[in-house]
Image: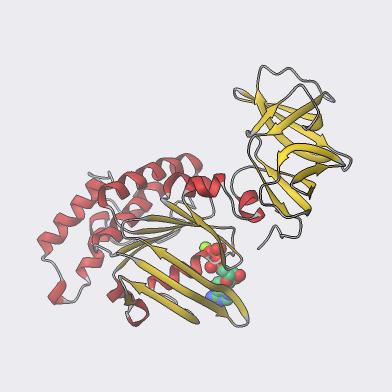
Length: 351
Ligand code: ADP
Ligand code: MG
């Protein structure tokens, strides 16, 4: 099912939690809402679910005004971080719950419900645990049951709010892979909230980066990582370092030295140069290069992490080099960023 969010505003008292958010989600897509805590992700998800209503704006499901539909009519599958299972019901009964409470006319027979719940238990790879109670399951298993329960109603859209948030790192990684497999098998339109960029980049077809109630950028994981539209997205996604520079007539200057970098379409004036640690080439000739002095060296698996002090203002930046580079503290290092972005200094880091 297509989901369309049009200029949605949500204000709590006088504080706006969403400032006119617009978003088109295509049928079958897995979309991640990614942003720091308080950026409005949960508010947007609750509005999609029908648990909350926008102060202004529209939500359409397949072109139909979803705000006129109740939660039940919207038929969405929900999984939250701590979406408690029913403690007094075993796994199979938990999964079948959404079907058992349907109005009689739309309720499948008991036999069908058991069959569907047991098929879903297979899908989430928990066969054999149907008689267990939630207290007899691990955190990861509980979230898989919650997921099966959300799928049981054959939802038009699946809404997941930090579903793996409470689990430890290893289990999270396993469940991520598992979620992707299930998504590929079942093809549900899925909106997934996370503050974990790794999770978003690894899972999503498209990532919606949010900050302070606004969408900063929408794009594929590659677009978001390789071409961040704003200083906020560059620094929020992946690792980055920043240097204050000047752009003059298409040239980039650092402390009065011209760098061998194109300024692209950056306007003249003070700017910030953003780069990623692994996107640099070390060069012998310092002319046109960024030059720094090593202050911290760390071995990182097959690589060397180098913290450099650069320029008159002694800005600290971090680069990554192959381990065979032998460096000492205070060694000078000259490098040229292979990939970088320039943003006018006036653009705030926060939106
Ligand atoms: P996220 O899920 O990205 O962490 P939320 O959508 O939960 O962010 O919150 C966005 C903003 O809206 C926050 O500033 C939060 O304090 C505020 N907010 C959310 N729900 C309520 C509420 N029921 N009443 C008042 N303020 C709220
Ligand atoms: Mg939240």
